[in-house]
Length: 68
Image 1 (cartoon, one colour):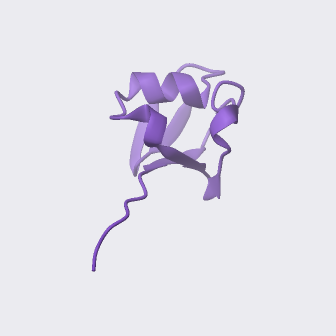
Image 2: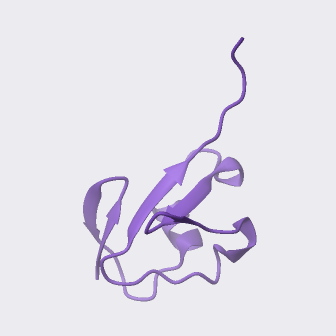
């Protein structure tokens, strides 16, 4: 199936979970990543059970603190 990951169209296996995609994409510090699918944020505990579908758009986000 085809999905979009960080703006790049990719071919992935059917039934791929978000957790599997995180591993497949070699996401740095996956314990700190926030994931949105089709512009909706997922709960961290759902990455193993959230299965991606044809045409899904996935973004990996990191929220940083700091500044003055």
